[in-house]
Amino acid sequence: MSETIMFIGGIILGLLFAFLLFIFITIIISYFNREKFDEFTPNVSIIIPCYNEEKNIGDCLESIYKSDYDLEKFEVLVVDDGSKDKTKNIVEDYQNKYSNLRLIKGEHKGKSASLNLGTEQAKHEFILTLDADTIIKEDAIGKILKPFGKKDVGATNGSCMVKNKNTILSLFQNMEYIYNNLIRKSFSDMFKNGIWFFGAFACYRKSVLEKIGYFKKHTLTEDMDIALEIYSSGYRVINVHDAYGYTIVPITLSAFFKQRTRWWLGVLQSLNKSKKLFSRKSSPSILFLFVNQYWWTFYALISLPLIAYQYSFWLVHNTNTFTELFMYTFRWFTFLGPIHVIYMIPEWGISFFSIFGVLSGIISVGMMIYALYLFGHKLNVKNIIVLFFYFPYCIVLNLTITFSLLRALIFKKSYFIS
Image (cartoon, rainbow, N blue to C red):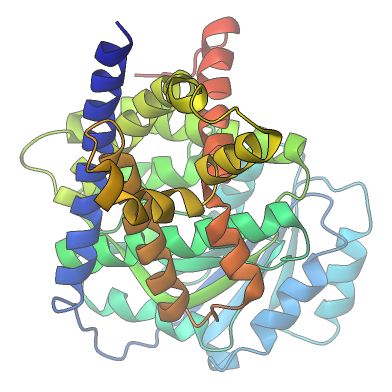
């Protein structure tokens, strides 16, 4: 019985390795398959929806006005969603300095309503949306606009980095963001369509937004939903990997779980709504979105009991002393584990029960190291520690997925609209 369970576990880990290997191959091939865009510098309306953002809105506006993009070619619309703090006062102070800054006062109806209000009042064809807790690099506006020189591009998306890297949790999120940025870049380059659309720093054609009926209020992740609707309308969505935005991430586990629950359910909700895209006619990037979301949902549910069983399977051989138990556990939940298994191959041989898990860990760390290099981060002590202990963070991510699904099942509210 135990060997049967371990064999099934080996198959699941084999599927995991195959999934990661596909991503790895895509990253390699995409390096030689980049799409080039000519210079394109149109007028653009920058929309910032905000609610109680007095701590962040100033930094956000400062980053925009420090941009190297021509000041005469953009307007800024801050849409206040009924803030109860000093957000409006801070924006009004900036209005005294910049004539192209407008404050739109709305009622507290949520982010989608604020984005729609700003889009309707925007003067220009190109709409750049920016979260109030996000700042951008000086050259980011120009870079995120370049792909629009091609008429079939309906939206673009920059690379989001972590701004507040001052806690253990935020350091792990920083690595995750960088890794995801690499995957997003690679799929966009390879298949000429992006994946994992983040609304914290994105740009759209206003005419396309009008065509599809603007941002919808009935989804948990309006950014993913709008991206899929743009795909459905025959336009491309491009990831601009070198257009950087820096956003604030949760620093407590409760806030982190709340955010990731909303994200995971929101993406599942959006995919279910746009399930007609899961067809042979769709771009491989779109198909990957479906496969990725459903694969990780399945893996999150099965991996937690599988990890517990595999840990206990070999535990009986590693409990002679406390030191032996500690080192066994330490190897299991750190990158020392794959290194140790590779080192012991001459003595142990290659086990079907463990080899794919080891290879998955090695290939993942390799891709993350490359992502650090590509996005200008150093392999310093902090990042090495994060890489070494990244497996426990993956377990936390799987717990958030499991929690998301339990929430969807327990509460009566429908998360899967059609």
